[in-house]
Length: 265
Image (cartoon, rainbow, N blue to C red; front, side, top):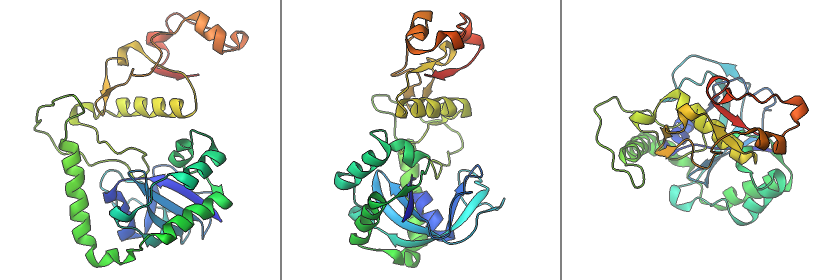
């Protein structure tokens, strides 16, 4: 059994279900095979089981509301679980993911890494024991409207501990289908650069690296959190000597402002 996992929100799940498609910004489907399973998670719960049902292709037709995702692959949904009945990623499932990918198994979900063997079978079994609501199509328009309203309400919530004013601007379109996050960026934080910085920081943490953010970005925020939270305060030569092969790395004092905006080591 060949299986991959990915995380998304309810609106994106229903959009994929409506069109029978999975999408990506880059051509990542080269090793995906007809019949491969795809498990979709919403809010860290097993929400649906789909199966690859065709060859990948590229298209500029608009499907998802937040981005084009021109690289696509047809999928057939086998199981869709109502939100109240969705199994949590706990117990044997979490243990299996940890055994397969280590304690930072979120990296495997984020990158839709191939999962095979007993762990994949356990995940599919957990979904098969949950109530199957594959008849979503009968109420799909209603559920899409509800999911869009829920996302809009989430976007209006202020960040924890911070009271944000209402801004008169165009509404944001939400998270990406392939993203592993549930909170939405506010208009003030929606810069592509900050998003990239936050993503690199997450990847660095997931892979066990120390992360450094350049001084000009330390005070910037993404989704209500400072980019510098949980990162190195500064880079020093002694730190590099402890962590790196100094014969193969040249330390530059001006690295902080002119060479790069983030570093994971």
